[in-house]
Image (cartoon, rainbow, N blue to C red; front, top):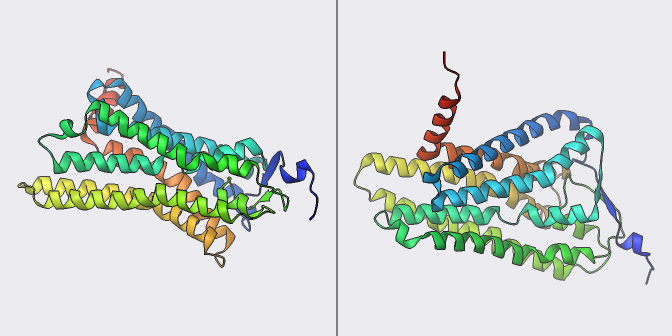
Length: 313
């Protein structure tokens, strides 16, 4: 059996090469990535500020919106600045601990936040006369805590398992950020158990959440079609349509990346990694618009804030 020293088996740093095959275009690719990141920061920080400063927005739906905004900001700030440093400064090194942090945070809570928002809308539309009785303040905090604890319990073991996985084949990762399967592929040990655990954790988070979200919106649509007012039906359908678009934008690249790692061996590496980065950039840009600005209370608060900020003539 070959012998490996500790540095070979557990390197202190990895090398992220960005998008393989498109190195010459990294500068041009970085422009929309940077703009998208700045828009995501602006949108989510504004949403958090509006909800925090307006006491009328301290309701279940807005708590879940705050959770989603915090999750978006945390995940993107963990990955995108490093991505831009690769594109701009060729700073490809990432410390092992930072790599494991990315592994944990990238997919930890966002799908749970989408499920919580879908559940809140389902309660509000299917039981319009008593939504507060079904989702009390304590219940809201309980749902939020459950989302955090579930993500931690299911995805938390990944960094600990990967920490002791011998990575002696190479230190070079063909990606812009660290993913579980990217690290598994460079391991020089049996990874069947870890791959199976990763598959199960992904299904119990993203997969189950996606199925429950679909069920929630089926119930919402069923209730919406039975509303007496045509305007109410159209409003419900419009809300569902926009929310479903956001969910599809979030889940499609995530599922594509997940399936490509396991089955898409003939998918070009630059296509796989580019689509994986769409997951990082597009959802946090559109979430504040669809879930925030399209919500009447938040839209009115935005307009009030900006109108009060205008200087008097």
